[in-house]
Image (cartoon, rainbow, N blue to C red):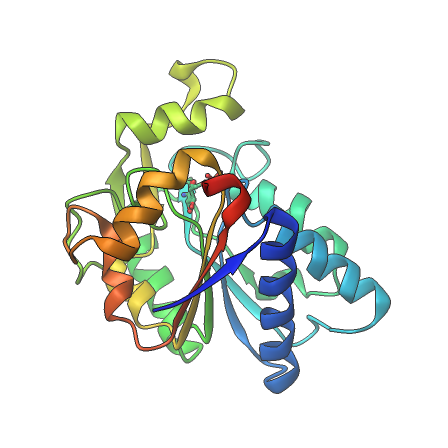
Length: 239
Ligand code: GLP
């Protein structure tokens, strides 16, 4: 795991964006794994502006998002499909047919999980995966205790995660209790990973990630075992 200490959120976002762009320029048919949450928004802004300037094109890029809430419609502003359209896809030259987010409204959710995992495999796997981290160390929606071998599955969200994400909903009751997430095994199969860490709420998670042991009780710790993982941390917000 390589650590890059960015001086602030802006620098973290810019470094990540340069890395993503370099990967797309090297492989225009990149399979890009994407994350939601506040942390990658700056990265997406940089990618949009580079796309508008003509520095990078998403025309042949395929994306796979990590996760989606169960039972939220894709048109619900809190759904991750809606988030991705608003924060990235609507503003770049990507073909929406090549953007994938698990369908939390599928009538057969177990089948949806199998299909999503197969779709990633059939595309040839994720070349570059962007990750954020939960304060409890979750990646995607893989909460503490999830097997490192896990594949795309339905998960029950930790109360801590629901509380953290309740800032986007009208009330705590509106926050979904379950989600579909690609598994830790799925994430670890990515050829390259960039983990972004920003915000004072992530201070302990960052310390545990770099100094703690590899344990299923702290899902992100698995990244210590990945051969090509870069952590870009916004030092200003963490210190
Ligand atoms: C959600 C997402 C994660 C994300 C996390 C942190 O739980 N499922 O993929 O990393 O939020 O979000 P934020 O960046 O807003 O702190």
